[in-house]
Length: 437
Image (cartoon, rainbow, N blue to C red; front, side, top):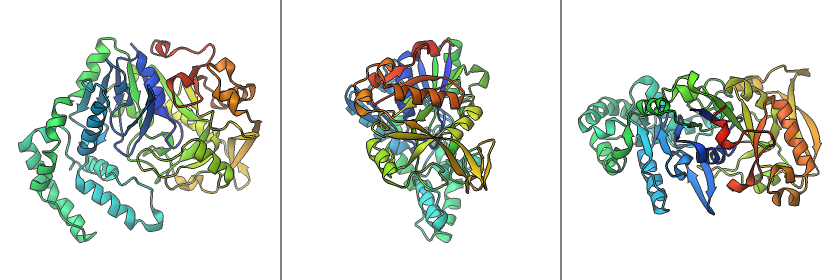
């Protein structure tokens, strides 16, 4: 048995879904452990592009159990649309399982999300407006509705009769917004309950049954390390725990079960929304990376901010996640630059920092990146490569330098969106072997 966690190393959008898709070819189950419809994974398979927001991207692999675990917050209407879209494309979703303990995003959560973001004015966080933060806030306040509640009519009504007056008081008296009725919410949920009910179960018990059977389990993270609620660039963070530790919190699987943690790294760095971004390029180079990399949000369509790879932040991700290896992607996007740069450290007030200033965006403000310049590589050499050995020497040198700075080995590199465009590095374990390490 092996339990492998896949995490993003920076501010998200690293193409975690692609690595999950590749590793799922060898897995028995994939478990998404946190986040909600504010996440987006894009996977290209058999010439078709699939965009996931809630369902683990491993659902594309026949025979793999795809689990949406306790730590998630789920918009049941968005989930129903996602299920129906996959079925319409001929994808078998019979292996999908939804935690009875996952919390439900309801219409008032979306309203509160938008109203609160507007009220922040210039201090906006950059939320997607999908209701994720308010839903997690209700979870912490113990006034949330869970997926198990929506298939228990008596309990659902009892819970909503306690909660709706509280929400209406905020909507009406703080934001002068429309109120909700219990009957309206129940009626709206009734349009999706029949579709979702067959998939809802005790996923903690299921995960432990899989471990007891010696299954190979893959944990799929959403967002990324620098957006972690506790250790990220607060307050410009998400509402959950994308780091590897979140895989245990959000599933009930003990940390001792995890055997490998793989970090997904872009050959450059991006982020969406507000917050300090030391390596951001506010010139034609950043624009070029954005257009070549199609750097627009899967969920929102917002243009992503782009900059050179922040290897100093990467060293932080290695530490907090306990990374055992990395996957370097998007090498094709940097092809054609005469020179490329990597951030190897920060200075603040002229003094070099020994460690990445985590946990508070104010600690990051005022930091200046220290760059190292490397020679670029040509486009044809990357586009025509069919293995790692065929990559241009300068691209190989770049990979080697990223490995050196990270302090952990690169297991895979990608030069495009297709499965066949991901290469295993020499002397690295295969996807199958990673579960046996």
